Amino acid sequence: MKKYILLSFIFAFTLQLIAQEKAEPWFKDGEAQIVPAFENQKDWIRTDLWVETTFDTDSDGKPDRMHVDVTRPKQTEDGLKLPVVYESSPYFAGVAPEVEGAFHDVHHELGAEEKEIVHPSVKRLGERPIISNSQIKTWVPRGYIVVHSSSPGTGLSQGSPTVGGDNESLAPKAVIDWLNGRAKGYTTPDGNEEVKAYWTTGKVGMTGTSYNGTIPLAAATTGVEGLEAIIPIAPNTSYYHYYRSNGLVRSPGGYLGEDVDVLYDFINSGDESKRAHNNETYRDDEIKNGIDRKTGDYNEFWAGRDYLNDMKPMKAALFMSHGFNDWNVMPEHSYRIYKAAEEMGLPVKIYYHQYGHGGPPPFTMMNKWFTKYLFGIDNGIEKGPKAWIVRENDKNDNPTPYADYPNPDAENVTLHLNSTSPNEGVLAIKKKSTVQLQAMLRDDYNFSGDSLAQLSSSIHRLLFTTPILKEDLHLSGLSKLNIKLASSKPAANLSVYMVSLPWNTDKNAKITDNIITRGWADPQNSKSISESEPLKPGKFYELSFDLIPDDQVIPAGQQIGLMIFSSDSQFTLLPEPGTILTVDLDKTTLEIPVVGGKEKFEKAINK
Image (cartoon, rainbow, N blue to C red; front, side):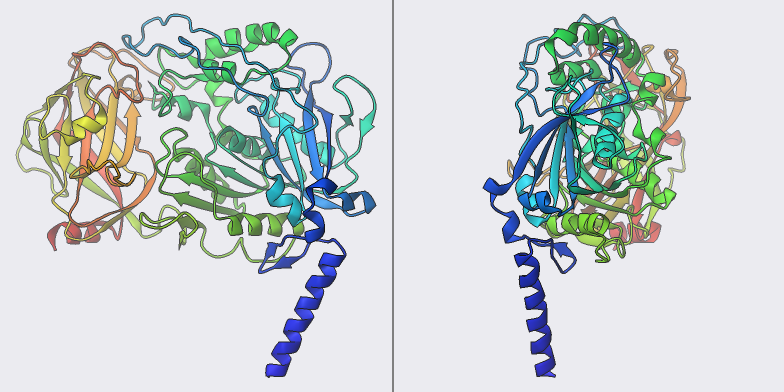
């Protein structure tokens, strides 16, 4: 037996040496391994070209061409064909500087006219032949070719930025078509000398973070042949969900006053001679007339920038990655696409960590995903648990596997708001037997959400808490607020935080210690996010909306708190203080997704 094991080891080692000597990809434990012959950067072949697309967004009468770079091992000149890892971005050629007035002023009444913003100009880098060095050191030594492209209207790519328009899906599609011989590439932006991708198998995987993570999904929604797998990291999958919440004008965290027009200016690094036309056509017409900062309603403009609406043709294997405490591109972006792809029967996995924006899955998982779908190695990565979640005290490279997300054992538990004083009360399974007085709060953005959660009492918020937990309680999925309320004015912000109390004020508190999840809504959109109407002061309206997805274990000794307030100084427009919101507590409930359901919740508070 020992002899057999020794011979097997020698045989495997010999095969490994042969593969390395031949300068061919080789695999161990289902992963592409580093090939020494591919490691020498001096031997890499680095070139650039322009791929012709099917659109003409700068209206010069010629199809726009995308600037593309290629980095490949020298052995591809001798007949070796390899798959591609591809990243595209609007950021590669530089972004706009910080300029006062470039963001929308959020200090005004809801629905009021806003003053014009300042439009900064990007100083284009447009370097060649190397657009970017991302991904290269990771993937080229493992037997991949790495490709980059600048998205339309950025860097040396022709056309115009549209911030989620169709051209941002069709541009990477054209590059993948070129890699498969279906589109033309040229040595110059305007010439006729062609470049062929003779060195690739045509199988492509895409990845990237944030906007760079959005583009792989955009490409996948075209159904382009050859795009086998994508790993979007913290992608923006809907510009409405990025800049609005349930009819409410809401900024991404850390960028108060940003909107599509601001982002357009930020990435507009293309040909200076085309910018006036592009600005007039897209920023000052299509975008300005589409974003509707007065009502925040969902419309055709937003529908055209929501990738959930475009998923029918998608075939690529999807591995999503996101942070549960990403308040810039919030985790709902990945969740909604993951669930849709799952329902379509596509190969899917999702990785969530407990931190903020960005954060890829463990490299071994990414390696196996691309190895499976680009090299065809049967490593089983597509099997087994679909969800991998980093628990609160673990490192990001040590996620816990679950059958799916949300946790299949999670069940919604409905909690009622039972008052104990004018602005405070208890979250309870049983509704109070007597009719409750309506609860009122006064809007004042000078009190931040974080500070309101720490006050023992305040007229600026309502706070209802569970009893102190006697044991840990695992929440997984979407919490939902069903609320009946009235406003003293025709428009009002509605902000909701779920918090873990007592609040940890230590400057080194973990990101999971205080905020569980958040949500925002416009009471004017009680019927639909596509339809708003001014509120009649004093009239009650009912609305229901989901909070941002989460998966968190609330430790024993804490209380789960529901905080309802109006303007959120970190996210919403900020009208003059004074609007009164009145909440009908008897017609307001919170649904939370508890692993173990109602029985587990009752045990946690009564043990």
